[in-house]
Image (cartoon, rainbow, N blue to C red; front, top):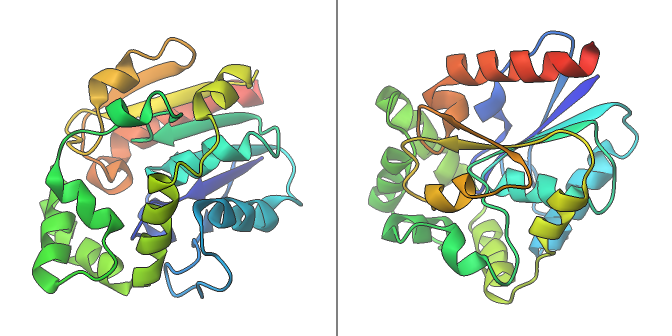
Length: 232
């Protein structure tokens, strides 16, 4: 079985380096404009979704694991494929009715949608995404600064224009295991909104927005327990 890991905005696939689940072949993907991957023709959120789908369409027995923007991409992939299961982290399900309540009123979050970032802004953003592993903030700052600025701009433009599918409907319609992970210290998303969802399993784990770095032990233990059910 394949565990396809999709990272968030202004990060790269290395955020999943500490994630290991027995019985799964892990596939870490760099999004366009991230991790040294060319931005290419990706100029909208749907282009990002299409890119990931083209990367994995040949795979069988897929579990989708997405973090932040990667979770929203995973939600959208439900319109194109039927994975065995889907797990998203810090990814409140969006539609036109819920987008206003999905995110916390934290001005730092706006930096994720700002094209050019100063060194101080990149550091501020990095510091806000970690709580238990603040020592990794300099490394996280490097990932943010290495991201193509236009990638953030295209994502922001798509969100502002409402260019996204009804994730709530997609998750409700999906018949496999669907899990929304809520980091307990995440200040960028509306945790209460995610925890109010009754159409998916909701799990709160200690840590901040980049949970794969902030508390990989808890996440690995949870994924190991839950995904083992797919092999039984």
